[in-house]
Image (spheres, rainbow, N blue to C red):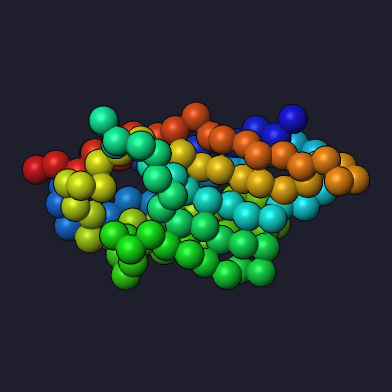
Length: 120
């Protein structure tokens, strides 16, 4: 009922930058939080950053000072600006959006994932 479309991944050299986008569509009454997760080969999926409905943000320690999460509420879109990328940032990045579709029925939707590869 709520679809997410991600874009912006790719191959970048160490120290470079990428910007990920995730657009949500569907009959949403309210978005409570928009997040980015990542999953590297052989590792569990981890939360990278979250932005709440009040624009409060949270980052995992390894990306603080390098990544910035933001949102455009009018477009139901969340962004992840990634600067000073390191090889250890290589992973598939997933967008996650949680909220309410109608009355008190909640939703928890995931994007299809976008590959980010940091390599020289």
